[in-house]
Amino acid sequence: MDTSQAGKILVLGAGPAGGAVALGLRRIGYSVCVISEPRPFAAVEGISERVVDGLRGAGFDAALKSLPAPTPRSVHWSGESSAANTERLVIRSEFDRGVLIDLERNGVELVSGRVRGVTRGDDGYRVEVVADSGSRTLQGIFLVEARGRAAPGSGLERLRGPETLSLLQYWAGPEMTPRTAVQSCADGWAWMAATADGRRYLQLTLDVASADLPPKDRLVEHCNSRIRPLEMAAPFIDGAEPTGELHARTSTPTLCREPVGADWIRVGDAAMAVDPLSGNGIFQSLSSAMQAPAVINTLLQQPQRAGLARAFHRARIEELFFRFARIGRDFYAQETLFAEEPFWRRRRDWPDQAPIHQAVKPRDVSIARRPVVENDLIREAEVVVTPDQPLGIWHLQGLPLAPLLRALRSARPGENPEHLLAAVLGEKKALAPQLLMWIRHQGWI
Image (cartoon, rainbow, N blue to C red; front, side, top):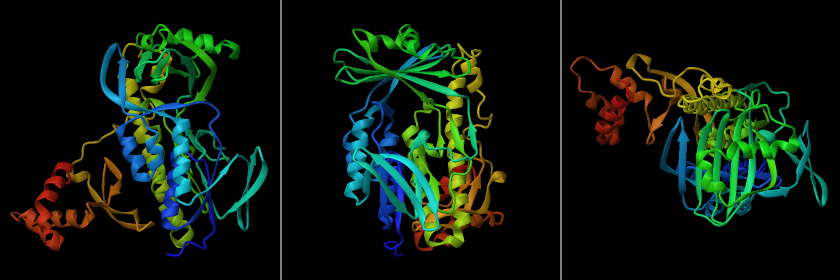
């Protein structure tokens, strides 16, 4: 497939989602330009090893080098404390520089500046970018919106969860062993982090409707008065003092109902943003972006499959959103000390009562045609659909599963199921026992 003459694709935003899409498009052969501007404040995030694996799979080699070793993580929730987990503290300014290095090494054009306007004409998109050196206009055939929660709404329909606000305050103190902590309180929860150089990051997440926040000039005092009494805050504030401005950020879960069009796509937080409590911010951004290059490639190279490609991206974004939203819901429901407080009451039942994982019985399993990714394109294939996997499972270790399930369901009384699988597998018949065990474990038969 020759994509070299297809024209330039413009990516707005150089976070994990925008970067992953850009790297994926370059691997296919597209010309890509990423427009981004530095973060307006110093941000830090805690990520799990699953996120590290996802970043590695996306090709973020230089960005990964900025990650420190895992640090201890303590949790005080519903009156109980635990310290069994770890997380890595990501200094976003360092990580973001690594992402830009990865993009440049892979042939992505980088433009630094603020997007002042986006217009669409018969010949594609024009994006006006403003920087210290002046303004310039970039042109492309396709637009990737990856500016996170700050991305303009463009009049698109959105589903919003309970309105949530996070207040971030920096502290400075003596050097200490890096660590993080989470603690619930009556009106929300706090996340605290400390790096080895004495920097502390204390964030309080509140319900907008019930927070009763004071005027802006008293926000720092209010935020610190809520954090100081917390048991888990002591190691972070002992000998330390607040420094710099307090930053307010929206943390409201948001789903864009239409995240893709004929010549544009939204990924990452611009498509769906989850509650930070789930701890999956970067992971969900990557999840929504990794298969976007195949969607874009299909829209550009096989417009006859445009409807299929859009349906694939839309369904995937919605499935990811509700999965992560339910993870957050169940974690909120575990807090029983403050269950009747407005913050917790609004979140323990949202977005619904559907379980994260549903029991699978053979009668609930079906074979259907669904969009899948193959050779950097979206096409339709037979997949196995279950209550726990509504988008379907296409293959396992490269082996299509629908033919295997169909063969097992055709079994006559007394017929050996391993023999049925072996007949379908042909040269790979030695895998029949292993596959049969896996299928039974899934509850398909």
